[in-house]
Amino acid sequence: MYSELGLYIDGAWKKNGGGNKAEDVINPATEKPLASLPHANKADLDEALESAKKGFAVWRATSAYDRSKILRKAADLMRERHDAISKIMTLEQGKPYVESRGEVLVSADIIDWYAEEGKRSYGRIVPGRAKGTRQLVVHEPVGVVAAFTPWNFPVLTPARKIGGALAAGCSLILKASEETPGACVEMVKCFADAGLPAGVLNLVFGVPSEVSEHLMTKSAVRKISFTGSIPVGKHLAQLAAKHMKRTTMELGGHSPVVVFGDADPEKAADTIAAFKYRNAGQVCISPTRFYVQEDVYKRFLTRFTEYAKGVKVGDGLEKGTAMGPLANARRLDAMDSIVADAKSRGGTIQTGGARRGNQGYFYEPTVITDIPDDSKIMTEEPFGPVAPIVTFKTFDEVVERANSLPFGLAAYAFTSSNSTAAAIGDAIESGMVGVNSIAISTPETPFGGVKESGHGSEGGTEGLGAYLSTKFISHG
Ligand code: NAD
Image (tube, rainbow, N blue to C red):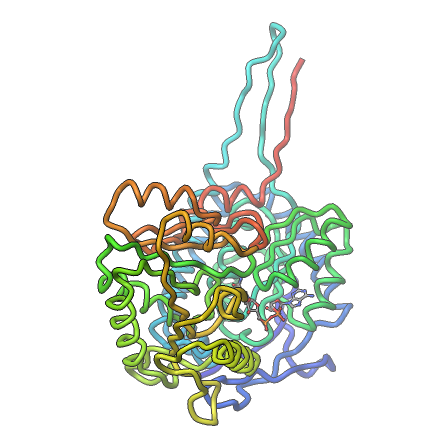
């Protein structure tokens, strides 16, 4: 059922057996190996670079209209093959099949959306000062892109980068996650089968730091797009600055949820609790700090905890599973550390708080209360199924606490007042705010953070613009 893995360079697959180093891909529900993944060596990376240069020349000369046809065909193939791709994703990443399926289908929508938007990359004519002059502003594809994607969304994150870059006319070298390579390999096969010219999209795997350092020193690479942790993002941003390459950095967050006293606490809890345990909390926009106004705190906490207790944890391929294992053993250690810190600071574990079983990286859906704002869970991105819930008194106080961290990716608020909704939307320092809504990630809207959560947007017209350079042409 699992994918046949390989590197995709210059329109050809390079599989195991060529003497390259390789690593095992592990099923997080069983801790057993699924397959062996070949690593790219330096010669493979250089070949990918040459291939991407050649691919760029071909692709930028292809009309946006014809590019769109190929992208749409790839999206259709993803839909046709969604069942197999989703099963592969669940095997390697752990998330329940329904979530994998949703991810594959939304990723196809992202490709479709970019396929259309790529046709609308208009320039403009600016009136000249002297008679007979003409001033043109045009957009051109930025060039060869190197993209790095993580293990929590093995198809969606690559889809955002592939869709934006290819619709703009760029070519791409993608280094997807070595921990979850199979679903991405299957997506790349859809592009190959849709007729994408050789070299336009290349897929490599390896030791992440070796691959990024090799590619980022090369002048042919003009743009870096990275999704992952803040420390790695800062490191890559430094490397990019050294070689003056454009970057999009989609990094971690620590999303506050503010539940005002005039909100319906049960309705808010139902909405946000289901979102909290999605992908076992391993989502950069996952709600991670819950501030509830004192008068509705008890009702919100009761309903949220009931939900957490009812979440069916298990193998993501089993019917009815609502939460799978964590994706790797590092996340289990991280959960143990933040929960131990919370306990040592007087925190109350309302439910969960421990690993479940001893095979597979399962962790209990957890709710913690009575913790100070400077505890680990309130200050470090948890990236797991742990929800800290605390109280607040006033609007100004909660805004100050919500904005007190260096993160600024997503935020959520619940209120029945239009003026509070407007005020909180304005006051929160983050790239995305959901007010009475968790719908902050769609193909057609910008997705990205501020402060240490990064810069640049993926999705929406901004996501296409991220792969375009602006040129001014003046005719005398
Ligand atoms: P990590 O910092 O080791 O790696 C994060 C990602 O960056 C991985 O995909 C990894 O392959 C890649 N990476 C690491 N070093 C790299 C390098 N030098 N060049 C290119 N890519 C490199 O952390 P991790 O243990 O995988 O995850 C831990 C934390 O990362 C989480 O707690 C979370 O904060 C963050 N994270 C964020 C996202 C996101 O969607 N923004 C996704 C995954 C992880």
